[in-house]
Image (tube, rainbow, N blue to C red; front, side, top):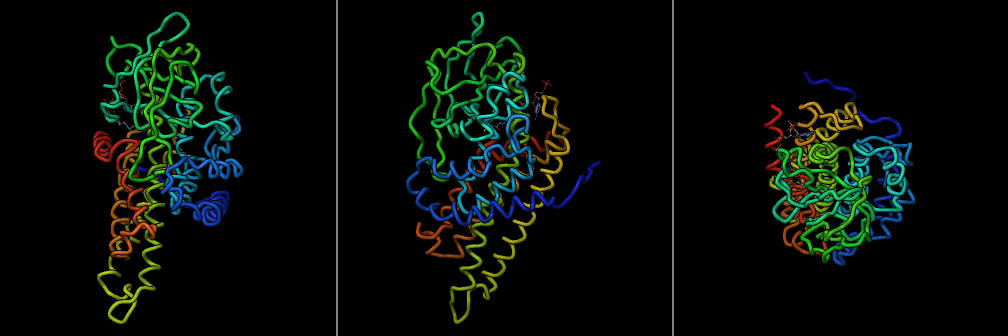
Length: 390
Ligand code: COS
């Protein structure tokens, strides 16, 4: 049976939303179009995140985080994504890259790594996907071989967000190939600058262009044994549980993108006239806007409900979440991102020729929306996960 823990924001969450909404409007929106053109990692935006304590929103208070919960993280991501989906990835990538440490790290590992990550002084990355794909996690090939008190890491990862800017990376590698595939891998914390660890060129992407996406190459990288998270063989479970908690962050990014495009298209439809009246008065346009409003509201409601469920079951260990909770995580990711893609495409349609021009923001929203259907588990995978819990 489903249970409803709560519905609605606490006073703190309302205040957080107001604060980040203002920050997004005043500090993040103005340079968003130029950052999309430049495609460079925006360190000035990182400074804004750090000044406002937003890099460690859901990090444990014990290690300098705000410990404000997943819903708070999603509130922040939505507000930023309304104006700039790439900047919105800063707190979410920090959470994704660090959650394996929060879930499976020893006190010593947490003590060493989490504080500089919560403050944003150091950046994190989550290194799972390889060139043969990111969906079939159990088939990944990067290898870590134990030699005394070290592991020797060889292989490569692709499409890693923050790959070129991260200081601390959580890396998935096979340690026990003789075990069955879901017990064959482990997760390690590695640091920028370690001998043998290099990064490829920055990828040029369709959307979220200012985020840093790269290949990672490991050539005999020596990892001290104390940098393994959990036990040998825990890797698959660590990464799956991390994704259970971070897929709603992608959903939040998608809802923000959809809302941003919707608001722009609505304003445009009220001002632009054809056949002697504002185009919103033409049913063909008005009905599109009504459908956009409905789908966004449904998406956001599903997202908030998912955050409630995950927060109520948030145990910072490796125990598996209830099937219903895993289902909601995947449902929110797939549904919100599909809505974002549909809404942004319709927003471009409403603006007509102007929608196709880079001078207007809706084509950027449309390009940014696409990745939310692909990363952190393609929407086809989310539907497999949903089915598996039924
Ligand atoms: N949390 C904890 N454990 C999990 C889990 C979860 N969410 N999902 C599966 N497991 C465990 C299962 O309990 C099972 O454990 P035992 O072997 O002890 O019984 C094991 O993992 C295997 O589960 P399953 O058979 O379902 O695994 P599959 O290999 O069939 O793969 C999918 C499952 C496809 C769901 C998984 O590989 C996946 O999510 N892939 C997408 C990954 C992704 O998001 N990639 C994007 C790039 S990273 S940004």
